[in-house]
Length: 367
Image (cartoon, rainbow, N blue to C red):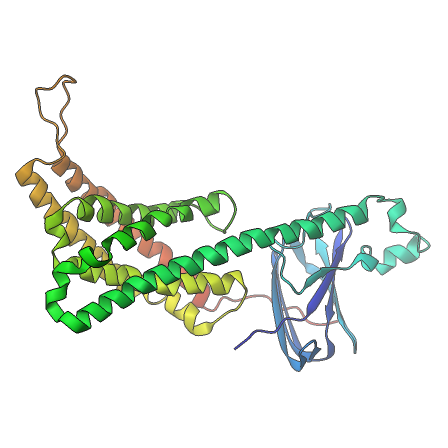
């Protein structure tokens, strides 16, 4: 179901924030306030008629939860919030991307009380460049459209790529049955390698501020996949013929064809309950299966490398250096795969608890 948001006009001075919610005939309003978050739910007459409207704002900085005013009239809802640290915020939201329903209230950049005390003088006398800065800020928000377009195209492309691999694997399996399993890598391996290399961009996205969060968790997951796919499977033809490769590819694709649509829904602020539940529940089945499949592939490679001494360096040699690749694989399984799986599962469990676990918040009453 589409979530409707009313138009919200915001203004500020050095001490306070002013929000005007453009909603008439408000019924059963609910205002939930935290230090860096505001959630509003209500029935009312807005741009789409008399319906349920809601919005969520993650503030740029902290506000004082105990100092707030809510005034409800027949034509709007006014909120006055107090900043913890005095000063001008560069924008209202924590992220540079501005929601389409959020507007700057140029006519109310200072509270009515201040205007009365100062004889309703023009605020531009104190801040001559205020309106220019606000216009530039609006333009800064519009520049974020490029980031939004890029992430939308990236997520869509990756979703289509993994969906293509999934469809091909399923069709070939239905047609050929168990005889197709040794040919899974031959059929879709090159496509999956390209998609996996493109996923390295997701390590850079948080570094350059394109998405929230850090780069460590994407690096753990994507780095581990690249190691298994490119080093363990691509360079070992005997592994490519194993049925476990087919099951591993299906698990990876199952994770991604859920993840990328979820990212697109969050990017465009279109919350979907089923998609959110799948994103933070399907991993409990898919991640352990994928981990077992990756472990089998690495262990089989360990046997092959131990027999052939592949990628190892023995003495004597000009550098007087020895390197045993089989030992590296043992260390990788013991100190990278197992701790990495624990870190990844713990991270997903924590995020799932935050997303689906019913967090208690403080509700302020209308005055």
